[in-house]
Image 1 (tube, helix red, strand yellow):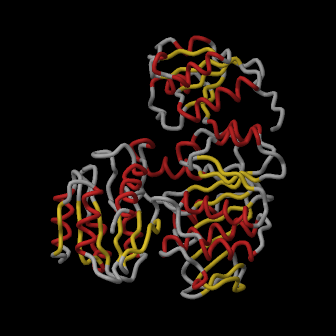
Image 2: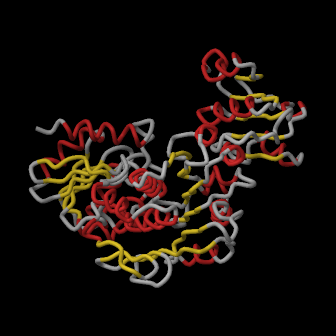
Image 3: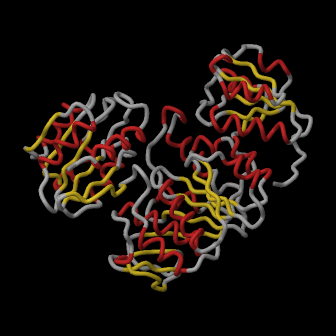
Length: 450
């Protein structure tokens, strides 16, 4: 960790705890700041706040006092999930205070360079692939960010020999000021999180934060197949590394139906890759490019691609059962993600779908439903999804109670050679606390198939 002195004796407010808030508060305290933590959860039910108080950090719990900012804070570190419309945040900005997320702290104290991955889809798979490739190539990677490990905690322990592979949400990037990854990746851009950002333009501007501070010594890997991404790439000062799945190119990384190319030269055959799906091909191109730029050998990259079966809950291969291959794509909480999953397979699919009813249409899936032979639907959208499936000409449909119930029906509707795919196209919150819980229950039930 760099001995950063820029926060010593400064009054800093950490707003919101969870893992990132706790790590930020502890790091700020270590850097000599006068830290106050404010969290809505009552102190008696807040073990995180109790632990911080024991370390000498001021804690205010159970409410957000209206006069909180009158304490003379010079900086606010907010939980990424807290919107900028929050009264305290809005008041802080009006007062001219800097508002950051813990990702900025991570950059300020890190001896290790960063590889930053963002985009609407594919972040977690790309991040995991890069970590696995660099690990196989003995490049001493660490993994952090939106993937579940708090970045400032990782950065505090990193050395100059490491590289921090970091999944970045738009929420995190909005709270950065000087953050500058050595290698930045923008996988794609689609409508997302508009309830947080207000407009698509604001969302895109937040995503552009991954390359905004880059210079000519850095690299920006971007999706040249998307016009909006190309337009933003033109504003970057980094060395541009385009990726495309539409055929061989002389620049960047590209792929055609059989081969992946680096700077125009063939480097591996797609038949050597275990991970299925066109959408995953984009993730693979990003990961290969980043790994090569960081000095990883093509042999290590091939080793990972030959065995990597997917990130948990993201088109994850679970098992083969009586000639059926079963996949868990519980992370598919919208139609776009389910559309990509359906397009990944050439065999007949028994689709398990449904969940929280947000009133959104399933029409976006219609073109990809041609390969679906049967649908088992559950949750609040169960009946609506069955109606949609029937409108697509699918006659084998069953309404299940929940995802566990759906597995048994899917097994009965399937035949040897079929794909059984959980890809809900809906959030999980009508029946489960997260898509991870939903996916774990699916896996547990699948493993019990006799």
